Image 1 (cartoon, each protein chain N blue to C red):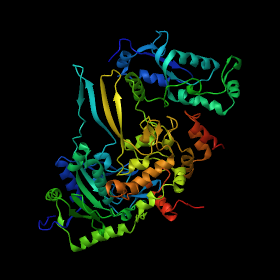
Image 2: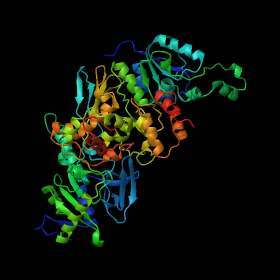
Image 3: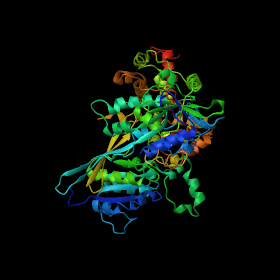
Image 4: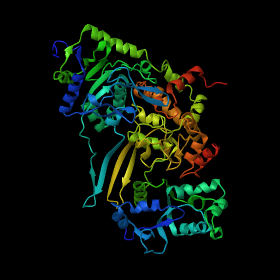
Length: 382
Length: 258
């Protein structure tokens, strides 16, 4: 296919074009990461081509349940988001911050952090995930305490977004206004078109870098019919949301119901296992561990993902501030949906549904919020 | 600064399989550094050269199952400035604590040809039921890297960096896909971290080798196991393994009697 250089608003590629795009990014030195099948799930992993993508698979998601299922078509992106989020690449779960040794003169020689040389290209980033990255940027890359390694990885990352063609059973991006259509923050955005026996991707260019890459990828100008079909895909997905969350006045609602009996009820179920925070694409809390060796010659400081569901998280002299499950669940949910707005100017939730799906006992944040909304004022059900 | 006199280390065995103290010898790359950092004064599994106490650091493996051991642990405590219990036997009574749910005399008469030679207690109990313990390192067996962390922390006079949260945190840090959400009952959400989520990394549910985590919600997890098809007997058996006598596991297992 030849690309009409005058038309950058809408290009169309076929699966071989997508293969060319992945190869092009790899040849530019990017570590290309995208969806792949592993352990009966769609995870984010290194990919070398479209053969690694979960062609013909989708996922069935419910609170505390995830199953892969065959699709009726050969869609490459026909799944909702899985257990992984891109934060595992941009903000790794375990990272050494520095190490130190005694030097010959009795002083301490400090080595800088191990810096990853990886420059990532992400394939298949969803609208909710782009919003999650923007939220983490606000926390980790902006302000007085920017995380330099995060900021560098983020700056270098090349993002190929995908407009969702399939919503999951725990998705609620429409409520959070984060999808299913991607709006900004990408280099290229694809919409997978499967109707009419043709397998095509409408390509939207979101940056100069994206435009440059597309010059090397065989493409054709999009027809009006294809552009219309892509819009219909997004519209259909928006109508499939498995969940909804009423965000109207939610900050005041939650902040005004800190003693609601629902917190006790959810605490009966909550395992304080921290899975929700680990899978959340915006949760950013970490702990640091200091280690010294047997000979007391070297030491290192390691940062690890942490969670407000652990006792250590709120430990101050004398004990943990949030020792009850009730206080920990309340902290997480009120921070995510309400106090985040005070702190960072947006909700901390993007409606991806991961915390709902990957809670081992299926606690559903949308259901918890709705229960408080149904009986505000702390009365609860009789 | 290194002191002239190295701290004196002792390793003690009570009712156990020796697996935890073997993990010290399994620290092959670090063994020389360990022998340099401490004086290995009393470690019969490693050396027949035994020096008299007192000891600066005692690592205690095993549970208390005989009247003799109940007296001996008092003596160990008296000789030890700092006493660390290692492994599920020492911290929770071990697999031999299954006797606590049954009649030990019946076992003795079934197993031994001459039961009159057997002097045993009716229960297997953790070391902390008998003497004050300064630190407990969980696991069946313990993780040797965690043991090195405890010893290194002791030598540096700092707190060991060992988390008491669930296995799930390690599981997610490792990038595993949750087996429980995919339909396999798993004890990870109620189990103390430390193994690095070994079994879920190989697509098995957690067996609870490290005992209860800091705030386990046993009832909620057991309810979910039932939703996944587990029978009361399955739940009881899962909880009655290496840490059967650890209180949260014990209480929940008793709620699932046939």
